[in-house]
Image 1 (cartoon, rainbow, N blue to C red):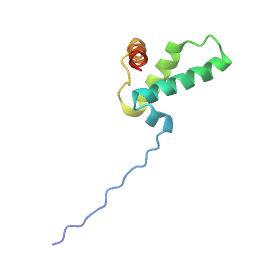
Image 2: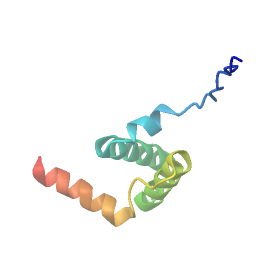
Image 3: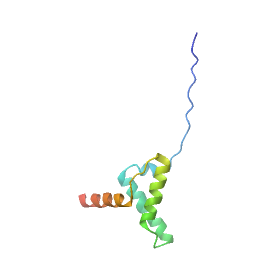
Length: 85
């Protein structure tokens, strides 16, 4: 008796290019600066920490983990990269 093969169905999931960019530290930093600039066009006092939290939360919703543990960790990484370069 032959076993019948059923091809498994694959669900298509679309991911915004911004999230692919945020997979790398440099990409997350780029997305952060772009988002901060966009928010500050409307409100010059928009806090950088809030932009970071929004990006980090959206990253979590897509990938199930946070990109950075907190804003200070992100800032230290940026400062470290600047000092190296």
